[in-house]
Every structure is written in C-alpha cells, then in structure tokens.
Image 1: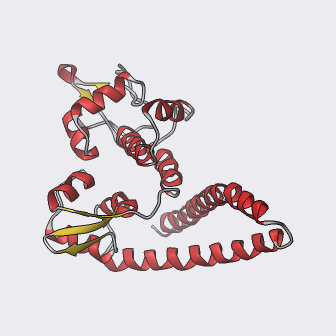
Image 2 (image 1 turned 90 degrees about the vertical axis):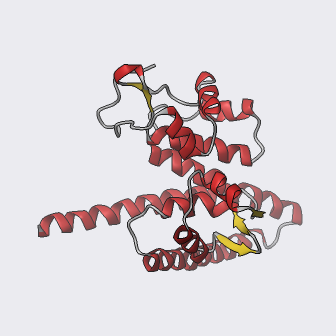
Length: 239
C-alpha cells in the first residue's frame, strides 16, 4: 500500500465502503480486484484507513465495461496490465468509451431498485426525469426500460453543472455531427471497395470500424482540449 500520493493527483477521499457504493459493487469485490492487481492500492491516512479516489472509480467502471463485453477475469487482467500505470481517471474514461463503443444496443426492463443498483447511486424523481429527457430511461408500467450503454454516461451528467437544456443541446450537436462524419466516411470507404468482392468488404469493415472510432475519439478529445484552452485563456485575459 502507498502512503504518498502523486502531487498532481486529486487527493483520495473515499473509504472502501464509499468506493464500493459509488461503483455499484461490494467491498469484497473491491478488495478482490486489489489482490489481483486490477486496482492500485489505497492511500493510507490517519488511523490506518485506506482512501480511494477518482482513478479507482474509473478503473472499476472500465472493469465493469469489459465484463459487459463478455471478457473473462484472466482476459481483463491482461487488458489492464497493458495499460500505462500513470493513466489518469480521464484517460481511463477514454479507454472505457472505446470499449463501450463495441457494445450492442441493449435496452432492459428493470425495477427502480435494480436501476439504482446499476446506476451505483440513489436516483431521485428529478434525476429520473433528467435521465428520461436524455433518452436513457423510460417509464414502463411499474418499472423502467433503460439503455445500458448510456446509463453510466447519463448518471455522470447528473452531477455536471450544466442546465438540462444545455445537455440536450450538446446531445443534439454530437448526434448530428457524428452521423455526418459516419456518412462521409462510409461514402469514402464504399469507393475503396466498390470493385472488390463481398469478403473484402467485410474484412475492411471489421478492421476499419475500431480504428475509426479510436481516431474520432482521439481527434475530438484533442480538439476539445484546444477549444477549452483557448476559452480559458480568453477568460483569464479578461479578468
């Protein structure tokens, strides 16, 4: 266990019970993952109490996504071992986004308690209304139909200091531009395989889809960083 966190890291503040509750797993699971090297050790604070932070939450979310993809524990261990040790919670979230992009569209009907468990937190009536507005959940009799591919993202957005209108407008922008990019890329690739047989087309699709998704995520991430850097520079210069 470590007692000296990186000066650039956010100070870990969660106990193992709080981490487990936030991640929607048991304390036993957290400790098991720790013994298998899937989670870094906690920071030991006063009274020898271990404290966890955003990186631990991000790793648990990534592990959960890998499980949803059907990976065995051994495969998950190999995947996690290949990741650079210094990855931040933000970097881990990007990895999870790439993994989640291959998940099939899955909509399940769940009870409110099951929805709370999968969300990893209590959900108020207002939270459910916001998730419904984001098209993440939909009331279905005495239960809910939930888009499992969007649930964690939707729950994370509940804590973002943006109005519901801004979130929905952002969603519209992302959908419109991603569909436009997907259409233009599809037209480009069709031109490349127009004279090839069906097997070549399937092979190109299988190879290009993961590469394109990774390229889009990386390009968008860098573009957004540049936009935010310019924005914060303007704000700082005006103050």
